[in-house]
Amino acid sequence: MRRKPDLKVKLGRIELQNPVMTASGTFGYAREFEGLVDLNRLGAIIVKGLSLQPTKGNPPPRIVETSCGMLNAIGLENVGIKAFEKHKLPFLKTLSPPIFANIYGRSIEEYVELAGRIDRLEAISGVEVNISCPNVKAGGIAFGADPQSAFSVVQAVRQKITKHLIVKLSPNVTDISVIARSAEEAGADSLSLINTITGMAIDLETRQPKMANITGGLSGPAIKPVALRMVWQVVQAVKIPVIGIGGIMTAEDALEFLIAGATAVQVGTANFVNPRVTMDIIDGIEIFLAQRKIARVADVIGTLETNIQQTLE
Image 1 (cartoon, one colour):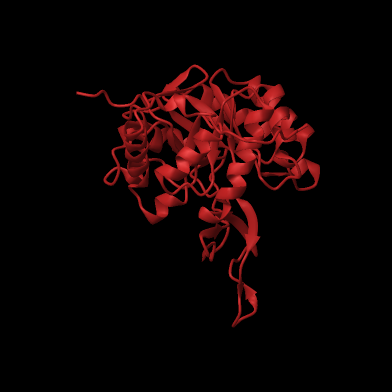
Image 2 (cartoon, rainbow, N blue to C red):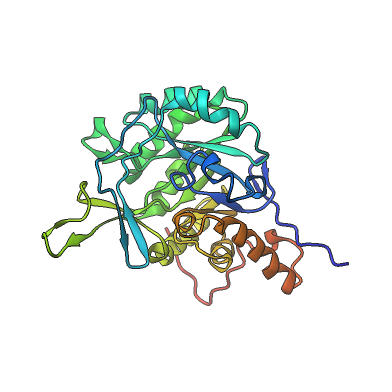
């Protein structure tokens, strides 16, 4: 009997049983999917973004369906770290995959305090730092839009935690490779990209924005080609593992990111379309490898062949 392909991948010292992770903000705190998904089959779980204090988020309407995707302006609504520890963490402790806490702050001090609290939680394997948030002290510029700001916040968090540090990058920049290198130099263990692309939608009848926030983050299949290109660029620019995100709906989508050089992938918007999609993607990757007699998923990572030499400096 032929052995099943080995789906294991490594993010630094953390071994994932497969490369399929859930994207923050699309999977709640995992319990919401308990009756739909075998949570213990996932490669890793990244919980909804956390802040120091509970956050109500933006007023509705804050989700709009678009061609090949969706816009959201949830406003990072979450229960806050105290309620997370008390009400969400006990269930997460019962799960076997690594759990990562996505965090955000409006100042470096907030990031540091939150990271320090999470570093003390034994059930959490690592932190994913969302640097796509407004930096209030820098006039509203997102930390992730400027190499020096990105370096500063990542360095500050790195000094506070011993756990695996993922830095989530924004695509709303001129050159994402520059930001990626800054995060790596500041101490990131791995990078995840891309976050949503800023967009908007207009109601023709009212001639008003369809979202109360006017703009929102575009996700879903519409952004996959952009995400794939950026992942490929960043993989060539850094030495640490890269996690691909953006429009992954099928195993074939996930495999494209792996071939481009991603060590793992995060599935986001697809969870709203098909709550069991992560299971389908894991199964599909296994079938793809078995059909081609590829023993390990690691053997397809970074195998993209190009006929041209592109300088990314």
